[in-house]
Length: 146
Image (cartoon, rainbow, N blue to C red):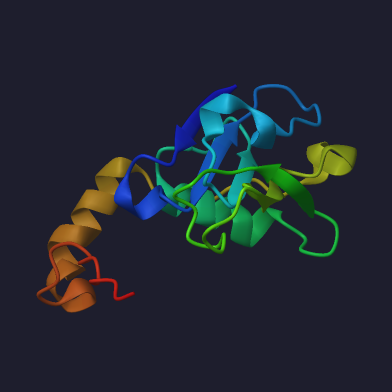
């Protein structure tokens, strides 16, 4: 299992774990996932858990919200959790476990991922990048207000 998330600014709300076997892995209670994460996303080997775009893509195309999201209540939290009313000795929160893996029951029939080659991707960016992205070099992070 490869773990990622919780350290980079765009991932501070979630963790992602990539599993290499088709077992039911719920890494939400592992110490490595941290105390303040709200979401744990389990992904397949072909998804990079360090790339938030890959993780969200897997959630969008491989998760059935009715059956692939579980809520675990009364999980460990910490003093820094903004959802815990202060002062409080009850340091618990909830976590959502999101299964963003291919459905094992019919994995052999699951559609193959279609992806452009790196060469074609680079060629397309050179030709159409300015039209598609405009002046945007990279997404900017918004300032948060309390």
